[in-house]
Amino acid sequence: MTWLNGKVVENRRWTETLFSLCVEAPKLAFQAGQFVRIALDVDGQRVARAFSFVNPPQDPTLEFYGVIVPEGPLSPRLAGLRVGDTLQIASNPAGFLVLSEVPDAQALWLLSTGTGLAPFLSILRTEAPWRRFREVVLVHAVRHARELVYRDMIARLQTERRLRYVSFVSREGAPGALAGRIPAALKDGRLEAAAGVALSAETSQVLLCGNPDMLKDVNAVLGERGMRKHRRRAPGQITTESFW
Ligand SMILES: Cc1cc2nc3c(=O)[nH]c(=O)nc-3n(C[C@H](O)[C@H](O)[C@H](O)COP(=O)(O)OP(=O)(O)OC[C@H]3O[C@@H](n4cnc5c(N)ncnc54)[C@H](O)[C@@H]3O)c2cc1C
Ligand SMILES: NC(=O)c1ccc[n+]([C@@H]2O[C@H](COP(=O)([O-])OP(=O)(O)OC[C@H]3O[C@@H](n4cnc5c(N)ncnc54)[C@H](OP(=O)(O)O)[C@@H]3O)[C@@H](O)[C@H]2O)c1
Image 1 (cartoon, rainbow, N blue to C red):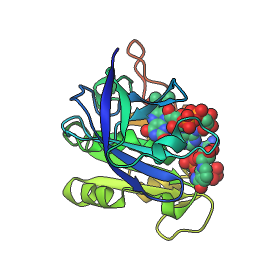
Image 2 (image 1 turned 180 degrees about the vertical axis):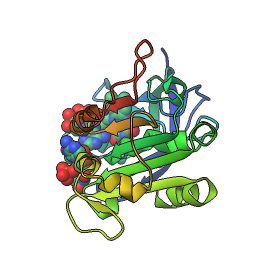
Image 3 (image 1 turned 120 degrees about the vertical axis):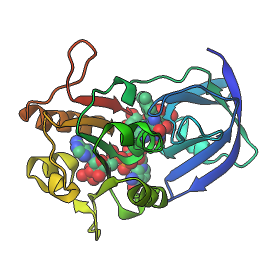
Image 4 (image 1 turned 135 degrees about the vertical axis):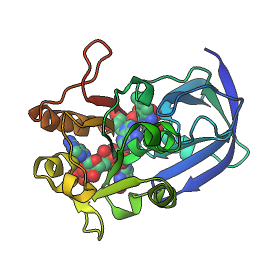
């Protein structure tokens, strides 16, 4: 592994705590859904963290979507970068949240909390989901309505592709979004009703990304439906990536 120099070409601030960095860097080979470590030198020490690509592999500009964890060593500094600043990018993208590892099915469910949306935006801007799955559902769960980001891109995928999008807002009322959390809405049928798609072991592959507690709770609900983690040697229906 080597470190590549990246130059910030845009730092978009969605809310006080949410930001997207666009970065020019030497070309990196990766699969949609993968992540790469990005780093800054802080007091002479290199501080590196994994970030999922928001951009699809064919895009020349890299894009990362992040939240400021106030006490975190890296995220507040990334959020403070300006156009023209440099950061380091590892040369070895990695990760198994990729469609090449996922078996065929009728429906593809992409369930995310917070910044866990990022890898799904990369996947959805490739051809594979539309070629391989009849129904594609993106679910994004956040605390506050203002954190429902990338709405223009999602709207384009709804009209130009056939994306079905369901949002959750857990800490305030929000028109058009479901209330509460993903696992409860899976359990009582509200999520499937909102998507207009059935979620079953026979018909669906489910990718989960974001908060580790969400991953655990959704795994438990899906387990009750006879679904289990997908492994190369023991095929199942659930593929996960925990952000912490
Ligand atoms: C495979 C992988 C991919 C990742 N992709 C992304 C990404 O695309 N965007 C992104 O913002 N982060 C992503 N992360 C998390 C990221 O690597 C950092 O942990 C995060 O940016 C915070 O860094 P930090 O140094 O400020 O704090 P850290 O010391 O790394 O984290 C401190 C604490 O902050 C909380 N936390 C960390 N990340 C998040 C998060 N994303 N949302 C909410 N709470 C969090 C956790 O409680 C964690 O223990 C990913 C992590 C992994 C393992
Ligand atoms: N988002 C903010 O306003 C904010 C502000 C300042 C700092 N931060 C930093 O960012 C971190 C949190 O970021 P975040 O809001 O993106 O992520 P988050 O805490 O993971 O919340 C995102 C969504 O996931 C839901 N969730 C949490 N646990 C779940 C579970 N077990 N099952 C299903 N859903 C679950 C939350 O619901 P609930 O609301 O019910 O928990 C919320 O709707 C904080 O630790 C903090 O460091 C965030």
